[in-house]
Image (tube, rainbow, N blue to C red; front, side, top):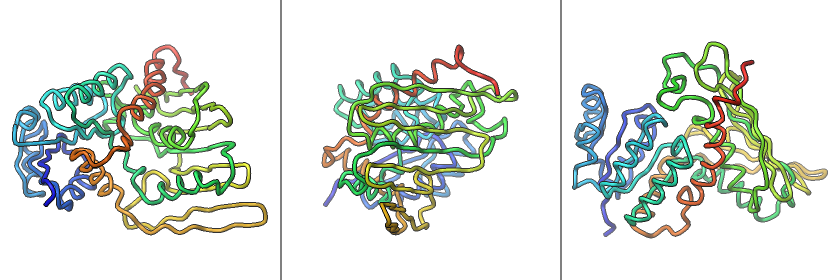
Length: 327
């Protein structure tokens, strides 16, 4: 019989309600031990909805019967509460983006290593069979050697009261959605990142960065990434190789009941690889479980993965005060 892991959820967010909590409840080896919110009413609402116990943040972290905690708070609060989780000896599943700076990420990763516990970033799309099939195709040389990657993740402007529009709790496009195209390129590159450059924009009526572009230059190819708020919705990427290219729509955020397609274009030949619907949130929760019980030695979305992404995100975010352009 496999070990049952008692897990708590810190933060009653939309993503936790719609995706992560159902995935946890449906996993046979997790027991949802409690939910915590800064609002007693919200904690009670979630606890009734998911048949568990309501907690305050500190009560959840200090409960010795709980083995792991999923933190689903605004990014600006990740370091504070992630550190408390790790100091309590509990495994940490941190909603993306991991922290607001490389220094904070390094401290949390080191703390996890010192305590021999897991600190994992909840980057769900990497656990979808669509991404796994793309990665497999690229590694097999289906399109030859990678020459270029283009990727976009953007959506319409957000209301001012949305948490992603609030500077004090880590709002802005860099911390919200750059992580998707950036992680894709870093994961698929399989070679050294030589250099990168970027442009960041802010709307007149916003206190946070709203959109930007990032160019990554690897040893043998470059990638162009566009991300942010104030766009017609896009969520896609093209991987262009020496012998063809792959194109994927809705490559990052997609409903669990939606089938997927990979368009493969080669000289005088086009084909579509069909990928069945998949619950990447459940797959991610299962991967977290495997890490907690010591069965997963791949370290995907841990340690080096986190720090490689955060080195770039941190530089962009820290540059806002001196490098922000209004448009």
